[in-house]
Image (cartoon, rainbow, N blue to C red; front, side, top):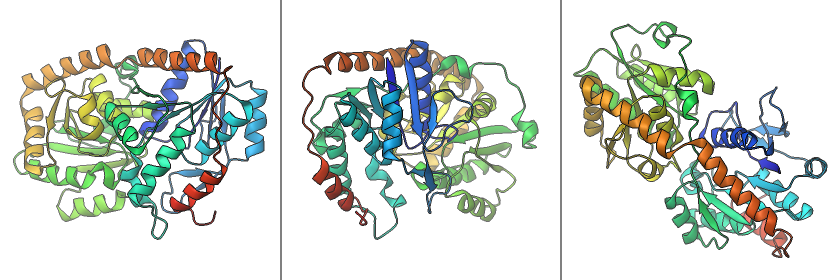
Length: 404
């Protein structure tokens, strides 16, 4: 089967969607499928990955907005004999997925990775849409596809509430566990000149408001009052980098807080393997892949049990979960993981076992493959008529793109 994946973000970008698309591509290929990725950023030497023209976001320099040339993508997908389209964002590449699916008469699967209502602040005023407009836009897009994949039950319930009527499958992204247990190649303490007697708290992800990184810094400052030999590493890039650096200086923590900037995923695994505890306070996650990756690497987790995180973790099964975003409780949980070595070792063992048994990437890839095959087999039936042209422009205007 030839699968065309269309996404607005892909590796080497570091985020959950890029990681998910790459993992499914690799594991579906292991199952014998041919998977082609179309994105504005792709690795130079990756086979079957096609770069689409794009522009940098004015307010998000590390991302690109795909500006696909429709006829070129259509001609390419036609030449590749694509059997099914799988989109991973309801924006520029998502629109291309709709067009290609309709013109080629092939099924279209969409994964709704992100709670878009939580990310409206990235669109500057006066273009920022209302929450209700985002919900209607999401329902409109999903209902133009053949089936939707939701990473969690929570997301499925959200989409049903928006008015999505096409079939919704709950299917999280799995973890390539074996990749997180390979031998180490360098020392992060040497790389960052961290004293050997220091414990390391790690955060990995976008340095952005929705990840609650400011809260993590406050919890770390409180922890430092009673636990001096500790360093916080924030691995990733994002719009709050400078603000976090300034705040660390104001709190007198500049020697104990390290912001790495962009870290290649293979290198990031080395950070997971060598840290002592993973700290995660985001309350807007769709799934929270990084917490599962930490467990797979044998790194116990302290996190807030909100949104996607509470759907994938179990308290005291590799982690300590807090019900609310409360700085004192979070700092105490970090301190327990760092000081109680027996408890930390127990969490490490339970975490690796839990991810291995419940979150295998191959298991998830087989389930996606089954969805593909069922849709392709049924695609000979008369496809739903999708009269979406008028709605297309109407919803784009409501979503804030006034130029249409």
